[in-house]
Amino acid sequence: MRLGVTQYVLLLAGGFAQLIAQTPPAKLPKPLADAAAAANAAGYVGSGVCKMCHPDVWQNFFRNPHYKSLASGKEPPDRTGCEGCHGPARRHIEAAGGKTTIPVAFSLATPRKVLDTCLTCHAKDYSRADIRRSPHSQEGIACNSCHSIHKSPVPKFLLAKRQADLCYGCHANVRTQFSMPFKHRVNEGFMNCTDCHNPHGTPAPTWRMGLRPRMVSQALGNEEPCLKCHSDKRGPFAYEHPSVRVDGCEVCHNPHGSTNAKLLRRTSVFTTCLECHNGAGTFGRQADGITLQSPSHNMNSPRYQNCTTCHIRIHGSNSDRLFLR
Picture 1: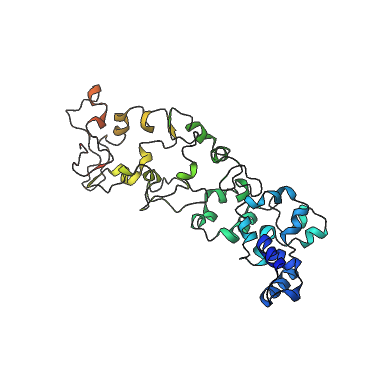
Picture 2: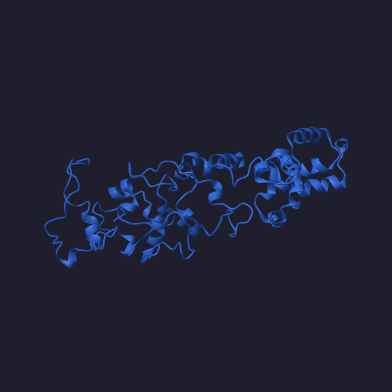
């Protein structure tokens, strides 16, 4: 049996739940009639009922990315609109409201319950594949700790506030680093925390071995996110600088901010180099550790205190093993 004009309008405007709630079963095709019976048995009433008590949410919900599940009509009745997240609302309506009468009230739900509810749809997203073992989830940070589903003040990702301010709420030490003289321009809006980090969790990094940074997104080839922008440092090079390839960029640089030029961890270039080039250790392929500079280098002389004046290809070279060119 074909749907009438009214039924098609309901389908486009409100999804299956409204169609089921407002169309007599005799006028529905058999597949929808079966869906109607299942939805009615489960207590689904349709999102159109919700707007009577929650007009502030409903008024702007059409701008919300979740509205597509309400309007597309491609989801089954238990995954459509308001009830797709909050569960069947019949008991809530019969009780004339109340948070305890709705199956999923996010303000009362545990972080585990919130995460399970959101992953009903978002589990298929690759960027959230490691969310259950991420430090945020393990510390009890739920989805609604960072996201405001109904009333987000920002244009992307339904965040509860501007992304940097959101992260600074917990990471106050990082806020201080981004206020230093030399920094990445996060506060200015040039870039965001998520350009380097995935707040939903990441696989274990491939650098720094036991000293692994947390939730750092990897670039192509399982490399550090620094190489997304600093692609000239990627290589591969004929002569690799082991500290860059093994330990990573942050062995010399502080990625958030520093009081030193080029985000260095030390006040000058030569003191940074001497952290490794001090003659200590017997590791490496030739068991000679990291060799000292030659006797001709008098480190008390300012002439030799900027190593990169000569060793200009310090991140790697294709022509000189000493990175001179």
